[in-house]
Length: 80
Image (cartoon, rainbow, N blue to C red; front, side, top):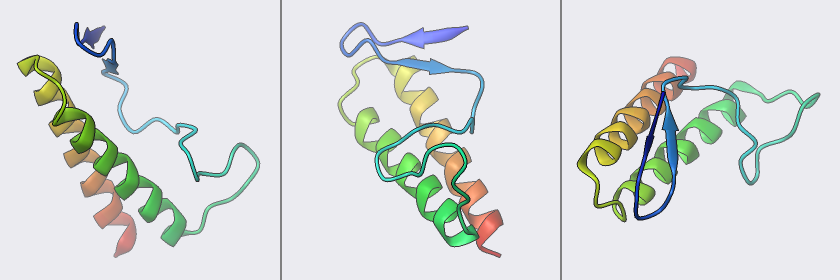
C-alpha cells in the first residue's frame, strides 16, 4: 500500500528503511562503514524533511515525517 501525493506523485511505501540507491550512496557490492551508513541514513532523513516541506497532502507529510524519524533513530542506533 502506498500513499500518493497528487502534487508531486511521490510514493511513500510501508516498507521502511529498505536499502535505496541514493545519490552518493555506493551500489551493490560496496560495503559501507558504520559511519557511512549513519551519514546515508541522515541524508535520507533530510530528504524526507525537504520533500515534506513541499507537500500539501497531510497524510503524505505525516508519512514523510515518520519515515524521517525512523531514519534518524536507525542512524542514532548505529552511531552508538
